[in-house]
Image 1: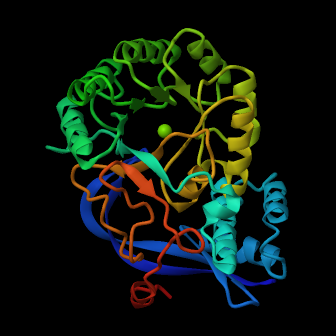
Image 2 (image 1 turned 90 degrees about the vertical axis):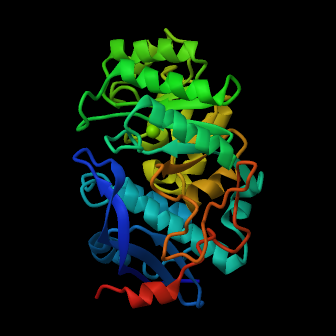
Length: 378
Ligand code: MG
């Protein structure tokens, strides 16, 4: 089999999410937005897909690099793109690598008639989810107060979620960041969920050491399950310092560049208790599986960052990761409504809080081609 074309299709849709000045999403007025679909074609009438590509990079760099290659040589292709990143990070980001790699896995699954998690080595067909909130805001009845987080947690428990994670307030919101207010929200959530529900916190990412330790000590008392990224992850020393002083599990790194290599350093240096990676962080499913097996070899969990089909299939092909991150969620947004470019959800959750991996060939994206055709941007 040979790759004959690598292209993108752009289409319009109505978005209800707006970004603040720091790039975090919140509910907002409905507005027109553009989505991109990556499509990799072959000479055997089978294609692979992934949503969210950079059209100019795909056209100028990825297309010439991939056309003519065997799409099943994912390891070679990933290694080649990884090497091309040197001195080219501006265009060849980890996101680009991830987009290409996920589309190649989707293609392999479609070609062989198997869901991707079976090709990776199936371990389970469902995984418990946690309700992962959007960041704090100032919307009335949204996520503006500790009580709002508690009310939303109460809703999540009724919906069947076995676990809940807060993303609290960050700039540009007034009064943010605040260790005190973060802990008030965490306490309010613990109150409504009771003592047995695993709860997690992802706060402002740039607290100093003292702030992060105060948070950790507060969360120890509230019996939280883990905390993510309370400080800049480029300072591994800060995390070695933090983990040595708290019994709270510290989970990371998440956004720090360096794929499996940087995660190996964190494990070796006792900078984390739980490792963390997702397809978008490390450059695809291929390096995510390397990271997962690295962690397994050190007896460490790797909690998967973010939702979506790539992460779900990896989770169903591993033992050392507990939860699927279902989000980012908000009281004003219905997470159980499929995107208009898909016929159904890629991560359907049952009433017991399990996300069941779609049992169809590839990554389980049931694409609504009529919608895409109707809304195509030329
Ligand atoms: Mg996080």
